[in-house]
Image (cartoon, rainbow, N blue to C red; front, side, top):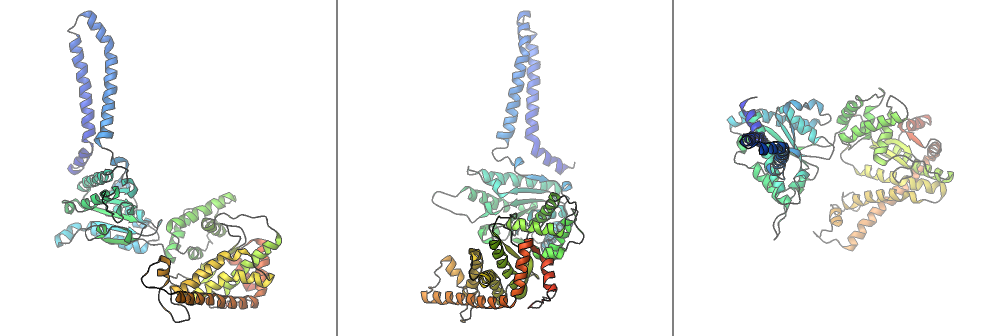
Length: 551
C-alpha cells in the first residue's frame, strides 16, 4: 500500500479506529484501577466489590459499545452517511470493457475519445488545455448509459463512484447538499490515491431540473444542485482530477442552464436506440447465451424490433427461453422469439369464447389489413397476422419495416392510412355492415391525415406550415380563424375519403385472397411471415410495389 492509498484509508477510517482504541483503553484502565483500589480495602469490602465487578464490567462494556457504535453511525457520519448511498468499485473489480458494450457503436466512438482525454491529462496540461470535467449522457432508458460509464472507468483505469439522483432527495433541507459534499470528499481521496476518479450520477434530472425561486426561499433540490455546482467549480478542481458523468432520460431543456455551461456538464454524449446492424449484433450476442436454433433469422428479428432498446432485446431473448421451457423444449425456435415480442408489446394471447360468425368477421377484418399492407405499403411488410385477443384488441396484423427508415414520405403515410381503413372496408364489402372493431383503426387514420394537413404541409390545397403544434398546445402565436380550421379539417377528411375509395378498389380486385386468408385465420388463428409469403406464392401473386434494395 503506497503512501497515498494509506492516507486515503486513514482519512476514511481514523474516527472508527480511534473510538475503538479509546474504548478499549478506557475498559482496561477501569479494570486495572479497580483492582488496585480493591486490594487496598478490608477483606469484607474487598470480597463484596470483587463479587460485583463482573456486573459493573458488563454494564461498562455494553455502554461503551452502544456509545461507540452510535457515535460512529449516527453522529460521526451524520444523516448523510454516504457509505450506504454510493457504490465504490475499485479498478480491479471493474472488468467491463468496450468489447462488452454491444450495439452502441456511435456512442462507443465518442466514449473512446473521452478515455483518451482522461489517459492523456498530463499531456493536455502541458499543452495548456483543460481537463475534461463533466459529461452528460442522454438517451432513452435501457440503452446502456450506466454500462458505458463503467466501461469508461475500466478502460481509463480509475475508480468509479455511482449514485442515483433520487438518493440526494430528503425531506430536510440541507441533507442533499451534505451528501454531495461527502461524495466529492470521498472522490478526492480516491483521486489522490489512483490519479483520478469518476463520479456517476444516474437520474441527474432529479436534482438538475431548472431551479425555481420564490419569496420563501429555495427548495431542497435547489440547495442540492447549488452544492453540486459549487463542488464542480471547487478551488482544487483542477488538481483533483474528478470527472462527473451524469445520465438522464429527460430532454436537455429540462436541466438547469448552469449545469450545462462550459466547465460543468459541457460534453454531450447521446446514447440512442440501436440501428439495424447494431440490433443484429445484440440478438447474436444474447442468443449466444442460450440454446437457440442456428436457423433463426437474426436479420428479420432486427427488422421487427425497430426502436427497441438493448434492454428490450435482452428481455425478448430471455422471454423466448421461458416460452421454450414451458413447451418442454431445450432449443429456442424463431416462433418463440416472435411470440416473446408479441407478449412484450401486447401481452399474452387469450382465446375468447365467441360465435363462429363473429370470429369470421374478425378474420375478414384482419385479412383486409394484411392484403393492403402486403400489396400497397412501400416501406413495410407483414410480420404476422392473428385473431387472438391481446391487450384489448381482438386481432392484429403486425407490420415490419423493410429497411431502416427515419422519416416518412407522403406515399408512405397515405399507405398507412389505407392499411388502417382496410379492415373497416373489408367488413363492409362482405357483410354490408361494419363493427366497433374499427374504432382504433379510425383513430390512427384520422391522426395521420390530420398531421399530414396541419403539421407536414402534405395537403393538396397548397397551404404549408406546422399549424398542428400551435393547435395542440393552445399557443396564440397567431390567430387561426374558424374558416381556416374548417378548411384544414375538410382537407384531412378528403384524404380519408380518397384513401377509402382506393382501398375498396384494391380489396375488390384481390377479394379472392382476402377470403383465402380469412379462412386460414379462422382455422389456424395465427399466420407468421413464412406462411403468409407461401400463400401468396402458391396463388401466383406478386407485389404491386417493388421490393426495396437491401441495405
